[in-house]
Amino acid sequence: MKPQDLTTNRKALTINLDPQIYGTIAEIGAGQEVARYFFKAGGAAGTIAKSMSAYDMKFSDEIYGKATRYVSRERLQMMLDHEYNLLEERLGEARGDDTCFFVFADTVATRSYKGNNECHGWMGLRFQLKPNSLPDEIIVHVRMLDTSAQLQQDSLGVIGVNLMYAAFIYYNDSKTFVESLADNLGTDRIEVDMIGFYGPTFDHVDNRVLSLQLVEQGLTNAVMFGPDNTVLQPSEALYKKALLVERGSFRPVTNVNIDMFECAGAQFIQEPRVQGEQVMVLLEITMNNLLATGVDLDDFLARVDIISSLGYNVLISNYPEYFRLSAYFRRYTQKMIGIVLGINHLLAIFNEAYYQKLDGGILEASGRLFKENVKLYVYPMKANAFNQYAQLDTKGSYSHASFSPEHEVVSVVQDVLITAENIQVKPNLRHLFMFLRENHFIEAISGYNPSYLDIFSRDVLKRIQNRDSTWEETVPPLVASMIKERGLWKARKEEHHES
Image 1 (cartoon, rainbow, N blue to C red):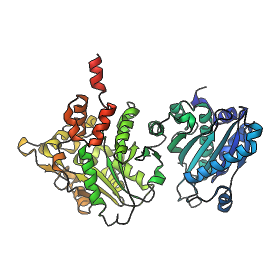
Image 2: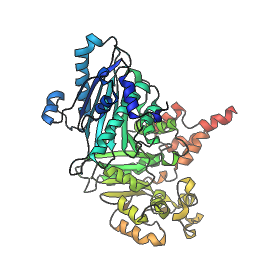
Image 3: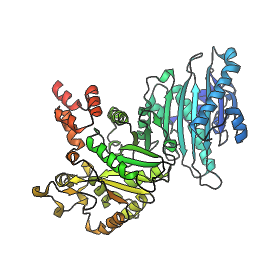
Image 4: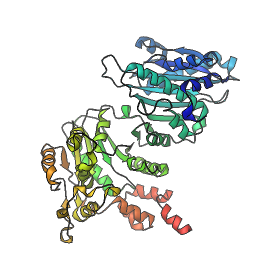
């Protein structure tokens, strides 16, 4: 049967009928929702050695030890460690030679009575694929999107069974594994925003690829990576932090990208609302424009590797509009958010065509973007480059709808700077723009390096592909070294040579 044709009951029964699979299900927070599916399917006595819950914090602490947050990866790891050690201690000698032990655990928070809490949870499976082998481990973080606790409990049971089944059946097919997590649920009931494979079976697996597949499959709209290439869980990484974020293609990261970030950062940390706060900086790449035609995961990973090597966190998102990106951050922090962007992106924000699906149009989008504690830091652009962007249509990522013929730039003034202070938006939007400027929602970046204003990623990329060595002057030395060592972005040139 195709994965999507398998019912939750059929999946649970398949696991129950495997005589080698045997272990523990431990659940905290929503009831024994995963265990319930296995018991309902029949034959669970051959699969479940123990099922348990410990809802009282005192009981939970006595069993697993204290954790800083009860719904956290830390608590999940405590549960997996404790229960797996018990399995080996009590059943290892009697059943270890012919049994694949497992522990499934989750710690979750479903909709509270007041209905104002974050509905999310951590799920994990520690398991053997062969008797007496070292165990592997799979960790996921989920967000429940249903509006009632009862529906959320049901969705937790379904995704728990999906996770168990995928671990034993699709462990060597990551794409099918990720896709199957939404079986019998869809992506409108559950979000999976973090996944990690660990252990000897998965030594070859890059967890960042799995994370990108989560975005590609629609299971989440954003994933995060740390400077050490680790997969980060957004609710923990962004929790109560002030954020400074720059959006771009970063193909490759150039000197102007770094200059934008450093200059904006110098202004951001002087904001009164940022004083004394912990600040997280991250570069964001959107996959939105590529999902329809297919995503080149290797290309994305190359960019992530370069950004990480520079010491920055990376966010990969599926948010085309800035107001959606801002709303995403607001899930996790109420601290100040600084968004770093160029003049071209600023004009895209003031392009009404992007907001036709919103009832309130650009006014609604502006309200969502600048709802609270959000400021745009805008990097200048030379007039000649500004004019080039004005000629691009929507297929080039920027729309000429924000420009009019009178904005065309003649060569005599091509070195004039276009900034957030002198940019001209369409006449019907000027009062809105001035309101945002006068209330300090939009601020011009100062202290920039004028010599970097002629650097554009698309031009640098062309030089790399054409093996024009002048590109090395436009990027940080570490970036140049990585591009040369790994032979990045030369595919077009090599294919032409081979033909």
